[in-house]
Image (cartoon, rainbow, N blue to C red):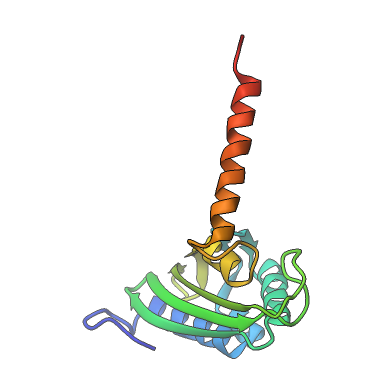
Length: 173
């Protein structure tokens, strides 16, 4: 784990972040959820809000099932007493069960993101705001075409054609 020099990593937020993200890296949901205040909110920007513990258990169980070799690593952690910022990288192969409605296709997931975590006076996580590039994830598993390729240009042309046709239908008079 890389830690920014000079940042206070020993406070409650730094400890909670290390415990929580370490448990996720080990795929230990019980240990991960033990870091949370019951009813806490994990806001995954591309997904929505999950409530601890049940919503998070459901999401991460599906994730770990869909990507049996899921790897998660913390690239940087900066924390103060009540908040922590964590930059991370996740990889895995989509060979397990379905995930968010998509069937496994053997593609390799590669994603980087940043989480902003807040803890209460007891050092338990009460909120996490997680951000990542969902289009990059979609490209990595084959849901969207590779960036800059012919398929992407064709998809863009079809989108623009649809937009032009829609404009013609909705213009008054």
